[in-house]
Image 1 (tube, rainbow, N blue to C red):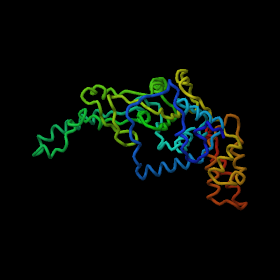
Image 2 (image 1 turned 90 degrees about the vertical axis):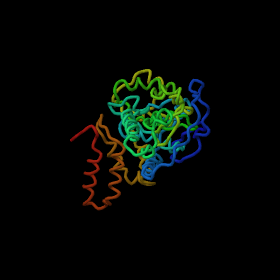
Image 3 (image 1 turned 135 degrees about the vertical axis):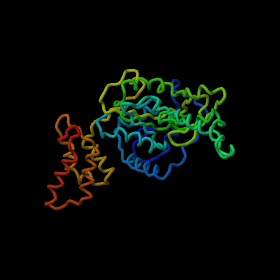
Image 4 (image 1 turned 180 degrees about the vertical axis):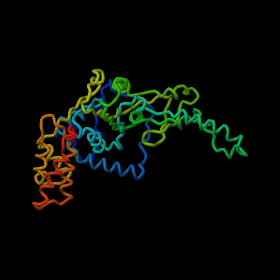
Length: 351
């Protein structure tokens, strides 16, 4: 394997990110003081991360996939990943995070109503107003001011930091020693304006929070909540990265993107896997010898009419059910064939 590859796609963690060369001069960012690494996850989040890591450890990218992931890492550019549903687009982001030790993947699932601000931060102005009204009224109602608890207006910026939470994109752009991994999932589902709205943030590696900028003179440093659930400091209302995050923008190909966005991205198209790659994926999930044992199921998955769409998950479901049900005798063979056909029904057919 070539020595230049930082991400190798081998499914095992390593310290390759420490050997990532400096960025090109035009992609070198100068964010403020480094933020602390994310705190430990709660047990339920840790379990979810464990499931994601197991899935990522089974991902076996092809040569082009590995090379373009590394191109995005070297050039500090987003990776636009296209391909059919179930081809492994989202899993790729988790594979990069797992192998390079970059922590939890910051996920931004895009829908038709998503806006740039959803990804950057949220400001609960109504909640802040209500809390201020309660805090100011409490001393007059309680017997003493001490009974009312701390006054949020005594905090920097009048306590505004309590009501601001960075989104996944905003958290990914915090100044950190190592890049975070951000998955912007199904960008093609977005409103027509979102891809264009992303251009400046992806190019400059920064964004501003107007609610904090207006207070920069009296409160230059304000603590806000990150997408990780930790408190981080925002200075002068501006967030600017140091290590540009690894950003995977996924698309099922339902729409075209504007040329300015394409210019800022490395484009990776993941093709429908052939038999050799499917066999490797089956071995990774079900152990050595599984590809040979379930060759007939793999062949059935590949046997499709032109234009039929199937996801690899359907193949895994069929094999798993075959394993767990323990179908072995001839009487059950028809059941296995029938259910396998149902589980691997083309996604673009409803009957």
